[in-house]
Amino acid sequence: MKIRSIIAIISCLAVLPMEAKTVNDSTNVQSVVDEVIWVVGDEAILKSDVEAMRLQAQQEGVRWKGDPDCAIPEQIAVQKLYLHQAAIDSIEVTEAEISAGIEQQIEYMISVIGSREKLEEYHKKNMSQIRSELRETFRDRQLIQGMQRQLVKDVTATPSDVRRYFADLPQDSLPFVPTEVEVQIISQTPKVDQEEINRVKEELRDYTDRVNKGETTFQTLARMYSEDPGTARRGGELGYTGRGTLDPAFANVAFNLTDPKKISKIVESEFGFHIIQLIDKRGDKVNVRHILRKPIVSQEAIDKSLARLDSIRTDIVDGKFTFEAGASVISDDKNTRNNNGLMVNVIEEGRQRTSRFQLQDLPSEVARAVDTLKVGEISAPFQMINERGKTMCVIAKLKSRTEGHKATITEDFQVMKEVVVNKRRQEKLHEWVVNKIKSTYVRVNDRYKDCEFEYQGWIK
Image: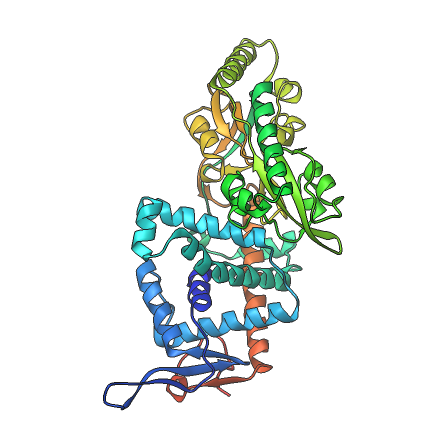
């Protein structure tokens, strides 16, 4: 059962501290419509919780391991254990993390159903209401994942551990490694006209004047005009954030603000231009709201960058210089410029870096450009939006391609190591849940006492 599905149900349902919920019908006879079936710590699990999760699982095509009547309440109970421990250990999630998860989920839902209008019609709610309902879902999801990461952060495996694990494993049990590629890029940033920059700055100055004159609030203007979708609907609020996670220029101004009534000067970052307002400071974190405006790149500027890259590609193909030399000197992409243009795949939230990508992990524009290339070939120039939301023009070279295959210890050690580490993580989490059950008050309805549970100790 996917964590997202489990948490989505848990967070959307009320927990009622009672044995049974009753209503009086027209004949004054009490009818039981809900009941508490499990208690975990001071949290109750209702029969309606289980039925709601069952329904969602059916809609998503989820298949349960074992009897769903036993597996569903057990999974809800496990999530409550994680959430309880997250509160004890002060695991925190930021508004930015929650909002990013909500937006990702909404975009996925829209892609499935067809449009925002259809999504609202299906749920019989507007987008604001849908986001509000998802907020607790994603808060719980982030807390549980944060707690799990904390529990397994020290789990690892040595090369000898990996070799021992796979030594006697049948060939058909070895992990399959999908096709992977290494890609180099040279990028050019189309130049924004000064007139366009002046227009954006004038808009931001106007916003500042309107707030200072009391005509409106910063929050209202952020909701209406900010081009940061993750914060605009919250009135531009970032939530408490450390300096290291912010653009340096933005952080320098944000952390130097002292008066919540004043608005910063205009700040240029990698994302565009901002004005910032202080909300609060807490230790080494600051909470601010901002309005982001992005200058529009003209088609003429884009065409110039594409033409320049076409000339660069021709020079490389003609042997005037190598792609690597061009990337080191010409490319505007700071993430690859000092690495001969080689793109880096950052996985496991930054804990692992590799030059290998599966095609679906590349930016879609890059994946389309290199999908039909032979190793060593260079793509035609193309346009893309980078992770900062900026328009870039790019040529890409396919450095290597490794076709899908069964993993081998010599070629795919990292993949095989990850299999072992993941197995150990699951074992550690299973052990933690079993031990947590022993030290937690649990009361289970008699009807579940003959269940075969995944975790031992629920029945005491």
